[in-house]
Image (cartoon, rainbow over all chains, first blue to last red; front, side):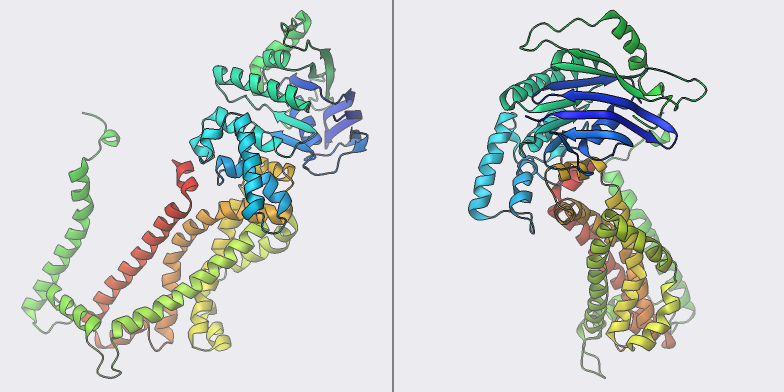
Length: 272
Length: 272
């Protein structure tokens, strides 16, 4: 599928360095999970992949071409919340992609076009197990169902890359397990490239084929913004459902303290 | 004994409590009226309740000797068409301008400060200008109502548009939505229930501007009638008219609230 390539990528806000010198290549079809403490630029990197933010220096390429400076249909996204539209039913949310594409002016389909779109959207709802909730509004769905809906909605565009920004962070552990099974299965079936940011180290290890750790190499206590984060660990993980790779001791020691402290450990409150 | 803030009235008690202030107002009025009438049976200031009732019946059923029309209905039709036109124009403009300035940064920069400044102009102070520019007919009254409520409505809807989560706008773009489609399928549908809310709030000022403009120059209308008969201390007309205006205002508010719930089930569901 799609290759993502970062070449000496920097992101700065004024004098604060968020990300420094990131160089890496993500091959098409990989399932990359990204962990790191709060404020270490994981989400900033994801927003750059989306096109919401642009690199200060360096290049970010998808299939060898620089990203356009705005979000587009080749990169789908699921956020932790607000990923679905509250004024549309589950069916309406999934239908939206086809409606927008086929009806540039009205944004609505009628007659045969609508029937075709309904059929396709219905199939997608079925794939994520929401066929019974087609007529419900998002406010009537549970958190897990809303995220399933958001995934279904994103997959309707057949994006080359699916970006997930802590998509399961607000869910109960049991529901989260179900979602892991779902996303794994969808990934295996579609062969899509997935880039997932998570707070949960265990989730990061279990789910992906490759784990990236964002962290600061250097730290200046006098000036917390002087150095940015970069990819400090880049670990290939076991595929095909084998037992999760064990967490290297050094890594877990390094990550566990900032991870548990979470957002309160905000030396760098500008990037979250 | 539980704290006062934890004590709740039962069903019957709640109704009784709600009725009490209305009853009290009526009782106080009748007592004051009876006292004045006992001193001077020709007193015009506080007519007895049954005199008011008879006056209302006369106003609503008997044609005027001068014009042959039933005054209450003529006045009501004139006033409702003015306030209806003014409010409808304001709703349409507020929705369009509010959504556009909330969504398009260029338009926001161009118009926000201007609208905020115009909103500071006291509408009644420019009423003479409207009379000079648009004559003393219907147009100047509709313009006054629109001028009085539109800036506040625009600013409210602009703010509501800006409050739409960024995640939603990004998600729409990843589904391939154009700016036009984001406006028509994402922003405006979510603004409509809020438009009804802000219209309910704007109805109070709208009535004020209607009555003010009718008081100064008109040939019919509820405000015109009240200010006309004021010269003769005709409380028998004024008080029923005020009660009627209150009832109309209350019904309009109720109607908008019901419409909001019927038309946008997702909106009330989300708030609860």
